[in-house]
Amino acid sequence: MPLVIKTKCVSCKKCVRKCPVDAIDMVKGKALIVEDKCINCGKCIKICPVKAILRDRDIVKYQISADLDDVKDSLSKYKSKKAKKRLVKSQLRQIRLQQKVLRGKMKALKHLKL
Ligand code: SF4
Ligand code: SF4
Image (cartoon, rainbow, N blue to C red; front, side):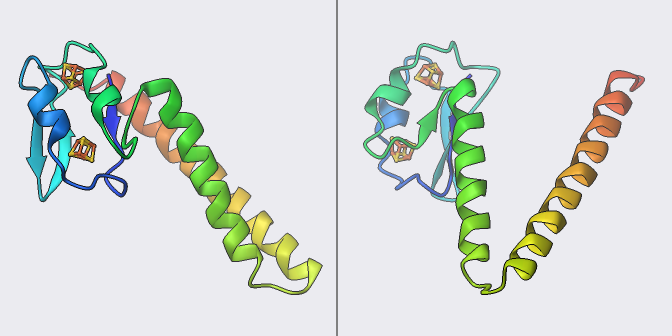
């Protein structure tokens, strides 16, 4: 299912008008795809003028690239190599922590009694 990158959406509503099954709502001025209704036709992806709608596989690439740009931006504020290394180390520690949280969350969700 496609996903809207909220920060890129310019609220033009072209995707809303194009969707054949009325699966896109506007929430706080940003497009939001309703998972249950979407038939994955891809029409919204093609019509979006700012490429704010991405397929699953492209979202991963986009997120990695955006996160890396943020890290590079932060690194540029430091002059010494030591401080830069400290920042990278700290980022890696945070990612490992997030991985643990996500793994725990996935496990808990799988065993959730409904
Ligand atoms: S992929 Fe197709 S059905 Fe799904 S939200 Fe986009 S236009 Fe609508
Ligand atoms: S077409 Fe793109 S920019 Fe326009 S509302 Fe949809 S997601 Fe946002």
